[in-house]
Length: 241
Image 1 (cartoon, helix red, strand yellow):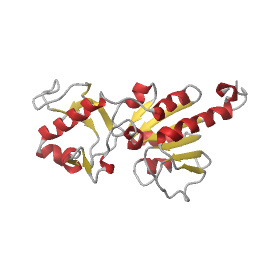
Image 2 (cartoon, rainbow, N blue to C red):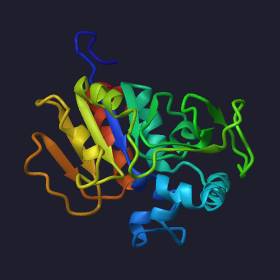
Image 3 (tube, rainbow, N blue to C red):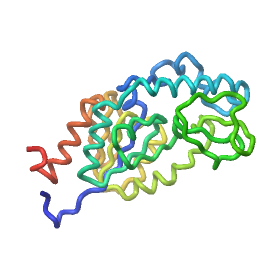
Image 4 (cartoon, one colour):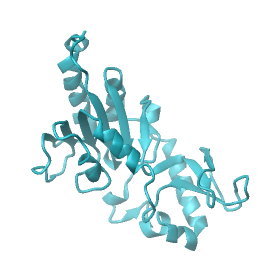
Protein backbone atom coordinates (compact mmCIF):
# COMPACT_ATOMS: atom_id res chain seq x y z
CA UNK A 1 0.00 0.00 0.00
CA UNK A 2 1.06 3.58 -0.58
CA UNK A 3 1.27 6.14 2.22
CA UNK A 4 -2.25 7.65 2.60
CA UNK A 5 -0.67 11.09 2.93
CA UNK A 6 1.08 10.79 -0.43
CA UNK A 7 -0.83 12.47 -3.27
CA UNK A 8 -1.09 10.18 -6.27
CA UNK A 9 -0.27 11.84 -9.59
CA UNK A 10 -2.88 12.51 -12.25
CA UNK A 11 -1.58 11.02 -15.49
CA UNK A 12 -2.41 12.02 -19.07
CA UNK A 13 -1.18 9.86 -21.93
CA UNK A 14 -0.97 11.36 -25.42
CA UNK A 15 -0.90 8.60 -28.04
CA UNK A 16 -0.33 8.65 -31.77
CA UNK A 17 -0.02 6.41 -34.79
CA UNK A 18 3.12 4.64 -33.58
CA UNK A 19 1.30 2.76 -30.84
CA UNK A 20 -1.26 1.39 -33.31
CA UNK A 21 1.40 0.61 -35.91
CA UNK A 22 2.80 -2.01 -33.55
CA UNK A 23 -0.55 -3.81 -33.85
CA UNK A 24 -0.25 -3.82 -37.63
CA UNK A 25 -2.17 -0.69 -38.59
CA UNK A 26 -0.31 1.19 -41.32
CA UNK A 27 0.16 4.95 -41.15
CA UNK A 28 0.54 7.38 -44.03
CA UNK A 29 3.66 8.93 -42.48
CA UNK A 30 5.45 5.65 -43.04
CA UNK A 31 4.59 5.48 -46.73
CA UNK A 32 5.52 8.77 -48.37
CA UNK A 33 2.17 10.49 -47.97
CA UNK A 34 0.25 7.43 -49.16
CA UNK A 35 -2.19 5.55 -46.98
CA UNK A 36 -2.83 2.01 -48.23
CA UNK A 37 -1.74 3.26 -51.69
CA UNK A 38 -4.10 6.25 -51.63
CA UNK A 39 -3.14 9.92 -51.58
CA UNK A 40 -4.09 11.59 -48.32
CA UNK A 41 -5.59 14.45 -50.35
CA UNK A 42 -8.02 11.98 -51.96
CA UNK A 43 -9.21 10.15 -48.86
CA UNK A 44 -8.63 12.42 -45.84
CA UNK A 45 -9.71 15.93 -46.87
CA UNK A 46 -13.09 17.63 -47.37
CA UNK A 47 -12.04 18.28 -50.98
CA UNK A 48 -11.44 14.58 -51.56
CA UNK A 49 -14.89 13.83 -50.18
CA UNK A 50 -16.49 16.37 -52.51
CA UNK A 51 -14.64 14.95 -55.53
CA UNK A 52 -15.26 11.29 -54.95
CA UNK A 53 -17.30 10.31 -51.87
CA UNK A 54 -17.59 6.70 -53.06
CA UNK A 55 -13.79 6.33 -52.98
CA UNK A 56 -13.62 7.84 -49.50
CA UNK A 57 -16.37 5.57 -48.18
CA UNK A 58 -14.67 2.52 -49.68
CA UNK A 59 -11.34 3.51 -48.17
CA UNK A 60 -12.79 3.77 -44.65
CA UNK A 61 -14.83 0.61 -45.15
CA UNK A 62 -11.53 -1.18 -45.76
CA UNK A 63 -9.97 0.42 -42.69
CA UNK A 64 -12.98 -0.62 -40.62
CA UNK A 65 -12.69 -4.19 -41.87
CA UNK A 66 -8.95 -4.27 -41.18
CA UNK A 67 -9.58 -3.15 -37.62
CA UNK A 68 -11.29 -6.48 -36.94
CA UNK A 69 -8.06 -8.28 -37.83
CA UNK A 70 -5.73 -6.55 -35.34
CA UNK A 71 -5.43 -6.70 -31.57
CA UNK A 72 -4.15 -4.41 -28.80
CA UNK A 73 -0.42 -4.78 -28.17
CA UNK A 74 1.66 -4.64 -24.96
CA UNK A 75 1.67 -0.82 -25.00
CA UNK A 76 -2.14 -0.67 -24.93
CA UNK A 77 -2.24 -3.27 -22.16
CA UNK A 78 0.33 -1.35 -20.12
CA UNK A 79 -1.97 1.67 -20.05
CA UNK A 80 -4.80 -0.50 -18.72
CA UNK A 81 -2.49 -1.57 -15.91
CA UNK A 82 -1.57 2.05 -15.21
CA UNK A 83 -5.26 2.97 -14.85
CA UNK A 84 -5.65 0.38 -12.07
CA UNK A 85 -3.30 2.41 -9.84
CA UNK A 86 -3.63 6.05 -10.93
CA UNK A 87 -6.16 8.48 -12.32
CA UNK A 88 -5.25 7.96 -15.97
CA UNK A 89 -6.78 9.49 -19.09
CA UNK A 90 -5.74 8.93 -22.69
CA UNK A 91 -5.86 11.59 -25.40
CA UNK A 92 -5.32 9.85 -28.71
CA UNK A 93 -4.82 10.99 -32.27
CA UNK A 94 -5.75 7.48 -33.40
CA UNK A 95 -9.16 6.62 -34.83
CA UNK A 96 -9.08 2.90 -33.96
CA UNK A 97 -10.63 1.32 -30.87
CA UNK A 98 -7.55 -0.53 -29.61
CA UNK A 99 -7.35 1.44 -26.35
CA UNK A 100 -10.97 0.64 -25.57
CA UNK A 101 -10.61 -3.01 -26.56
CA UNK A 102 -7.56 -3.33 -24.32
CA UNK A 103 -9.67 -2.08 -21.40
CA UNK A 104 -8.86 1.63 -20.97
CA UNK A 105 -11.99 3.46 -19.79
CA UNK A 106 -11.08 7.13 -20.24
CA UNK A 107 -10.18 7.75 -23.89
CA UNK A 108 -10.62 11.03 -25.75
CA UNK A 109 -10.33 10.77 -29.55
CA UNK A 110 -9.02 13.98 -31.11
CA UNK A 111 -9.40 12.91 -34.72
CA UNK A 112 -12.67 10.98 -34.56
CA UNK A 113 -13.42 7.28 -34.49
CA UNK A 114 -13.35 4.70 -37.25
CA UNK A 115 -16.30 2.82 -35.75
CA UNK A 116 -18.54 5.86 -35.95
CA UNK A 117 -20.18 7.69 -38.85
CA UNK A 118 -22.07 10.95 -38.90
CA UNK A 119 -24.43 12.95 -41.03
CA UNK A 120 -22.81 14.95 -43.81
CA UNK A 121 -25.00 17.95 -42.93
CA UNK A 122 -25.90 17.51 -39.25
CA UNK A 123 -22.73 17.08 -37.20
CA UNK A 124 -24.58 16.04 -34.04
CA UNK A 125 -26.11 12.97 -35.70
CA UNK A 126 -23.44 10.36 -34.94
CA UNK A 127 -23.86 6.59 -35.16
CA UNK A 128 -21.76 3.63 -34.06
CA UNK A 129 -21.22 0.87 -36.63
CA UNK A 130 -18.70 -1.75 -37.67
CA UNK A 131 -20.38 -2.23 -41.02
CA UNK A 132 -19.60 -0.81 -44.48
CA UNK A 133 -21.20 2.52 -45.44
CA UNK A 134 -22.15 3.28 -49.05
CA UNK A 135 -23.57 6.13 -51.11
CA UNK A 136 -27.27 6.28 -50.34
CA UNK A 137 -26.87 5.39 -46.66
CA UNK A 138 -28.38 8.40 -44.92
CA UNK A 139 -29.22 9.75 -41.48
CA UNK A 140 -32.82 10.22 -40.32
CA UNK A 141 -32.75 13.71 -41.81
CA UNK A 142 -31.96 12.28 -45.25
CA UNK A 143 -28.33 13.44 -45.48
CA UNK A 144 -25.52 11.15 -46.61
CA UNK A 145 -23.46 9.47 -43.90
CA UNK A 146 -19.73 10.15 -43.87
CA UNK A 147 -16.85 8.84 -41.71
CA UNK A 148 -16.71 10.39 -38.23
CA UNK A 149 -13.12 11.43 -38.86
CA UNK A 150 -11.45 14.82 -38.55
CA UNK A 151 -9.88 15.30 -41.96
CA UNK A 152 -6.96 17.55 -42.85
CA UNK A 153 -8.24 21.12 -43.09
CA UNK A 154 -11.08 20.55 -40.60
CA UNK A 155 -11.26 21.90 -37.05
CA UNK A 156 -10.34 19.59 -34.17
CA UNK A 157 -13.34 20.13 -31.90
CA UNK A 158 -11.95 18.28 -28.87
CA UNK A 159 -8.60 20.06 -28.77
CA UNK A 160 -9.66 22.56 -26.08
CA UNK A 161 -10.99 19.72 -23.91
CA UNK A 162 -7.68 17.91 -24.28
CA UNK A 163 -5.73 21.06 -23.40
CA UNK A 164 -7.74 21.45 -20.18
CA UNK A 165 -7.00 17.83 -19.28
CA UNK A 166 -3.26 18.35 -19.77
CA UNK A 167 -3.32 21.51 -17.64
CA UNK A 168 -4.34 19.42 -14.63
CA UNK A 169 -1.81 16.63 -15.15
CA UNK A 170 1.10 15.79 -12.86
CA UNK A 171 2.61 13.28 -15.31
CA UNK A 172 2.34 13.40 -19.10
CA UNK A 173 3.39 10.46 -21.26
CA UNK A 174 3.70 11.01 -25.02
CA UNK A 175 3.89 7.74 -26.94
CA UNK A 176 3.59 6.83 -30.60
CA UNK A 177 3.96 10.38 -31.81
CA UNK A 178 6.90 12.78 -31.99
CA UNK A 179 7.28 16.32 -30.72
CA UNK A 180 7.25 17.40 -34.35
CA UNK A 181 3.65 16.25 -34.85
CA UNK A 182 0.72 18.39 -33.82
CA UNK A 183 -1.57 18.50 -31.93
CA UNK A 184 0.42 16.39 -29.44
CA UNK A 185 3.37 18.79 -29.56
CA UNK A 186 1.12 21.76 -28.83
CA UNK A 187 -0.74 19.98 -26.05
CA UNK A 188 2.49 19.28 -24.21
CA UNK A 189 3.00 23.02 -23.71
CA UNK A 190 -0.24 23.23 -21.73
CA UNK A 191 1.29 21.01 -19.05
CA UNK A 192 2.14 22.52 -15.67
CA UNK A 193 5.74 23.69 -15.62
CA UNK A 194 6.85 21.31 -12.91
CA UNK A 195 5.04 18.24 -14.21
CA UNK A 196 7.02 15.16 -15.19
CA UNK A 197 7.01 14.43 -18.90
CA UNK A 198 8.02 11.29 -20.77
CA UNK A 199 8.43 10.89 -24.52
CA UNK A 200 8.56 7.33 -25.86
CA UNK A 201 9.76 7.55 -29.45
CA UNK A 202 12.53 5.59 -31.17
CA UNK A 203 13.51 8.53 -33.37
CA UNK A 204 15.57 11.57 -32.45
CA UNK A 205 13.56 14.47 -31.05
CA UNK A 206 14.36 18.04 -29.99
CA UNK A 207 13.76 17.96 -26.24
CA UNK A 208 15.98 20.65 -24.78
CA UNK A 209 13.18 23.25 -24.62
CA UNK A 210 10.76 21.07 -22.62
CA UNK A 211 11.36 21.18 -18.86
CA UNK A 212 11.51 17.84 -17.04
CA UNK A 213 11.16 15.79 -20.20
CA UNK A 214 12.68 12.32 -20.32
CA UNK A 215 13.08 10.89 -23.82
CA UNK A 216 12.96 7.09 -23.92
CA UNK A 217 14.28 6.13 -27.35
CA UNK A 218 12.48 2.80 -27.75
CA UNK A 219 9.34 1.42 -29.36
CA UNK A 220 6.11 1.76 -27.40
CA UNK A 221 5.56 -1.98 -26.91
CA UNK A 222 8.97 -2.37 -25.27
CA UNK A 223 9.32 0.88 -23.32
CA UNK A 224 5.81 1.63 -22.07
CA UNK A 225 5.37 -1.52 -19.93
CA UNK A 226 8.72 -0.76 -18.28
CA UNK A 227 7.79 2.87 -17.59
CA UNK A 228 4.40 1.86 -16.20
CA UNK A 229 6.02 -0.59 -13.79
CA UNK A 230 8.48 2.11 -12.70
CA UNK A 231 5.67 4.56 -11.95
CA UNK A 232 3.67 1.93 -10.08
CA UNK A 233 6.76 0.90 -8.14
CA UNK A 234 7.33 4.47 -6.92
CA UNK A 235 3.95 4.54 -5.14
CA UNK A 236 2.97 0.88 -4.75
CA UNK A 237 6.25 -1.05 -4.37
CA UNK A 238 4.50 -4.13 -2.99
CA UNK A 239 2.36 -4.38 -6.13
CA UNK A 240 5.35 -5.51 -8.21
CA UNK A 241 6.71 -8.07 -5.75
